[in-house]
Amino acid sequence: MTPAALLRIDSSKATEQIVDFINSVFTQAGKAKAIVAVSGGVDSATSLLLAARALGPERVEGLHLPAKASAPIHTQHAQLVMDTAEIPAANRLTINISAIIQKSWRIIQRSTPGVGAAFTPGVNQLRLANLAARSRMLVLYDQAKRLDALVVGTENRSEHLLGYFTRFGDEASDLEPLRHLYKTQVISLARHLGVPPVILDKTPSADLWRGQTDTNELGFTYTEADPILYLHTQGQSPTDIIAAGHPEPLVTTVLARLQATAFKHQVPYQL
View 1 (cartoon, rainbow, N blue to C red):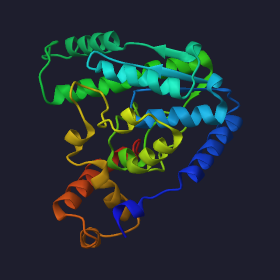
View 2 (view 1 turned 135 degrees about the vertical axis):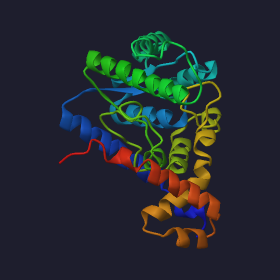
View 3 (view 1 turned 180 degrees about the vertical axis):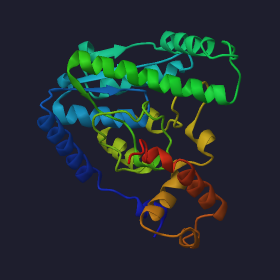
View 4 (view 1 turned 180 degrees about the horizontal axis):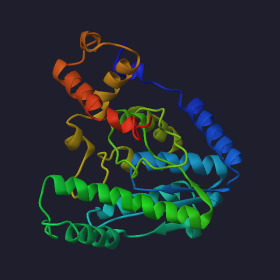
C-alpha cells in the first residue's frame, strides 16, 4: 500500500465528526464563544473553518499575533483565512507581541548573573523562540478570558508525536480538533473545507524567527515522515518500516526525533 493510501481520509466524514466534537465540547463546557490563534498557516486555517462551521462565524474570534520576526505575508494570509471563514470584522483582532517578547527577554537576561542582555546564536535563539510561543499563549488566554471563550487548538498529530511544539506555548488549548490527524491529512481536510490554495501550498513554519521552516528544523518533510509515524503507531518495527520501502536514514532520523522528545508527552512527572 502506498503512503498516500495509508493516510487517505474521508474528508466529508472527518468534517462531520470534528464539528460534532466541537459542539459537544462547547455544550459540555457551557461556553458560547471560541477563539483561534490564526497564524496564516494551514493548521490554524483548518481549525478556524471547523470552529466557524460548528458554532457559526459570529461566535468565533480570530486572533492574529505577529512578532518582529514575522513575515508580512502571514498577516495577509491570516486575514484571507478569516475572510474565507466569514469571521465578522468585530471578531478579528491583531496584537503585535514584539514588545512583550523583547522586554521579557531583556528582563530575564539582565536578571541572570553573568549573562547580561546580549543575544548570542544557538541556544539563545531557541530560548527566544520558546519565549515567543509562550507569549502568544499568554495573550491568547487573556483574550479568551475577556471573551469567556474556549481556545481552539491547531496542533496536528505529526507535530504532537514528533514533539514539535513548545510546552505551555503553541500546544496550549482547551480542545484540539486536529490532533488525531497527521499533517498530510490536515492538508486534505483543509482542501475540502476551501482553504485558499496559497495557504495550502505554503512551506510549514512556526514563524518564530525569519526564514524558519519546519523542514529545516526537523530535517525531513511531513510527506516523508507521516507514513513512518503511522506505521510506528501501528506497532511496526524499524526493520518492518524500512522493508515497506522507507529509506533507512530517514526512518532512523524520524524515530530518533520521537525518542528524543518523548518526555514532552510525560511531563509533569508524578508519583
